[in-house]
Picture 1 (cartoon, rainbow, N blue to C red):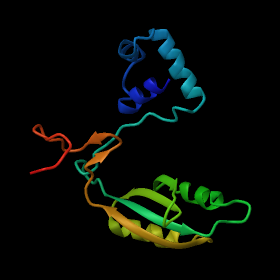
Picture 2 (picture 1 turned 180 degrees about the horizontal axis):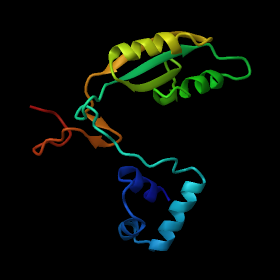
Picture 3 (picture 1 turned 180 degrees about the vertical axis):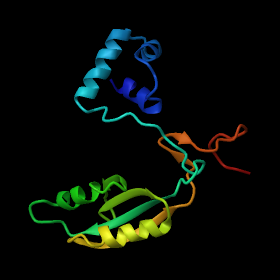
Picture 4 (picture 1 turned 90 degrees about the vertical axis):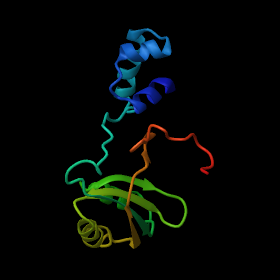
Length: 159
């Protein structure tokens, strides 16, 4: 199962036949396993990884740290549910460390991000602080290296 998941996560366009060839399993077994994983919502969605820096009107990506006061009986859930309902929010994570939630979003401009934080996030009852960080350049995302150079050196020290 994990091998199938890792292959699909790396390239969701792989067919059951291709996965069967890679794993040495039967095509019908692989297809049945994928169907089961989809039914059980282990596989939640198939998507493309886009290099928005190369796309016209790609916008800006921001990571927003959110500190909150947990709500009695709900903990972080009520505030998290309110935040993830905004269309602008691409990802939302409960974190350990200096802040509680990490919000990832892409917007047309830095001003749009700022307005979203001010009008929506900071206005939520229980949010005590936010800090916005803009992604200047993506080097690697979800295992995919952006702008990979043909003569790229192996990991290690650069001289």
